[in-house]
Image (cartoon, rainbow, N blue to C red; front, side, top):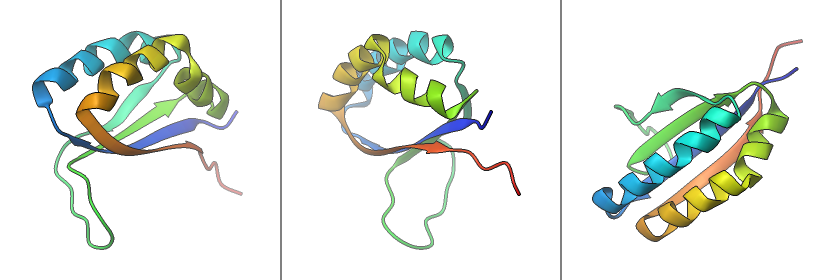
Length: 98
């Protein structure tokens, strides 16, 4: 089974209010087996446009990554994020080689 990933690039406009999203997303991420591979940290953007925060989450499967995004738990978390941030999000299937 191929793993699934979320790749998120986010600009946070109100760090204090954004904390509500961080608390709200924890239940959904745990339920669907997500694991943070990247959560903020230093980065370089040698080409293209950057955002201030970058996150990569690994899921047990591509389907679990999709299911988490569409779950009622995560949709409720999005409502707590959207007013305080702008971002680009991808859900992508992993590569296991030839």
